[in-house]
Length: 270
Image (cartoon, rainbow, N blue to C red; front, side, top):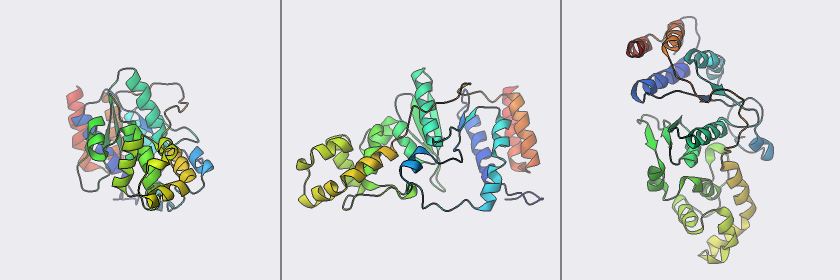
């Protein structure tokens, strides 16, 4: 998608459409966004191979990212990006803070890494399955899918790796085997401290050879929930004034099919 002037808009359109759907169907008390910063993260400093395989952003997407702040400002809600941390760490910290205050939190993401932060009052809406409807994961749904508690998922990643993040796997360990090991031992450190219980011998030896890698990968995969967020509101409602700003921006970006959806939200808010 492009405007008549040639400005690419497909990613912005997709985000705008998703946000309108959330406002219409989920009726949240408010929204907050988390953003990556351009500086290297502590993970990249600790391990230069982390995400190093990812190609540079295509120019059309880079051009749209320059407009992203305008879209977020139009919705009139906070957006946080903290240098040296990933957006996922920011979301994990926000979820912990808000849930500890009694708020129900729905994290909307296309990144399964955030499944690990699911807990009481924190659910994750996964929107990353192409062509499939979003799926909401609570603690029971995570346990049904993986047979593990959400907080154990970084230990699973330590064994099976993560291609998208360039995290290595342990040779000879598949997904089901990793889940069985984590169920039995609890986490990576406990597994390594009780290797004599692991059978067969070939699997035990493979894990032993990869011991340091396992610990390092688990640490990289575990999200931080203690990001030093700046002062300010942790979320804000999207009111009529913001919706009018959104409508004006969507008109400028030629999102004609989204305008009736904004108008419906405005009507409901009046």
